Length: 195
Image 1: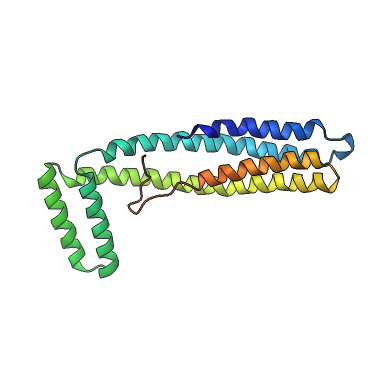
Image 2: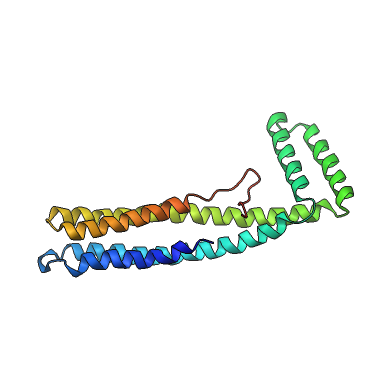
């Protein structure tokens, strides 16, 4: 989906290795923190990369689904029924509205609306599962960012400013990664944008 994620591990490796290469021998207590932060980041990065691969697969499936005849009309039916349900609190009129609209859709597109709706629901389930993973990974990313902030504080408190700045650079890269993860969201019918 977005290629810049492939460069994050390289940037982190460069930033961290520049800090580690010049760390004085007397600062051994920082190295376990740095090792822990790097290990957590490595595991997390693999999971984030897999998320983007899975999102790309869903995005391609969504693009094909959105191009099927009748999707804009079905989307509007879904939105209308959802808004009617909100207003009527389960009134029977919402059911008749849905029945009329779906019957008209089936006649217009010469296809059972249930088939297209089943495809839609399948995609909603996939998008919802990805969204749950995305939110969890974003939270974990903040945790890893905190580990690197801890390394920065420890380095600065010992007067090792180059090492502290190297860890700060990793924190900045992780902030950009968190922002990018945060840029995804589901639309009002529970699907991702496929552009």
